[in-house]
Image 1 (cartoon, one colour):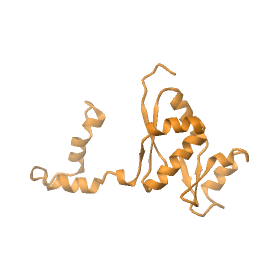
Image 2 (cartoon, one colour; image 1 turned 90 degrees about the vertical axis):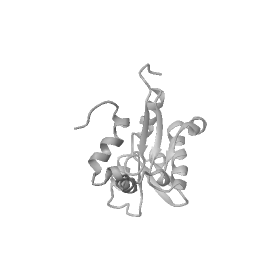
Image 3 (spheres, helix red, strand yellow; image 1 turned 90 degrees about the horizontal axis):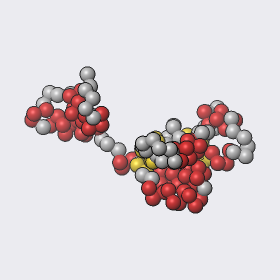
Image 4 (cartoon, helix red, strand yellow; image 1 turned 135 degrees about the horizontal axis):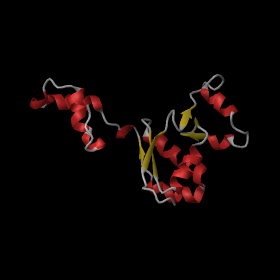
Length: 157
């Protein structure tokens, strides 16, 4: 393990780690990506969940997950898809990246965020504006109040 500070990485699944196949393989990015892989590697990069929903895992992610883990970093996943799909997809990604035994050991420590975990920014903005002291204020003012905990003491212009 590396001696650098460990970090947590959250991967957005759809369009980044995986490409859901929506039935248009012939002239899609999926078809092009599949041509880049050897025939023997292709099954590792095709994951089916919820019975018949196929996903293509972009090349390089399994190696990236292994490298991040070897460096002591945490990996987590997010998708605005339904939780049932994500809860089935992520363990299969881990199994392909780390093997059955190690993936079962890692899975309890990995967070999987889904559609119910989304932050409703529009509703938050409406709630913010409903407060008497915030009438007439916009997103810019709201973001200046919400972002300091994320960005620390750095001033936003």
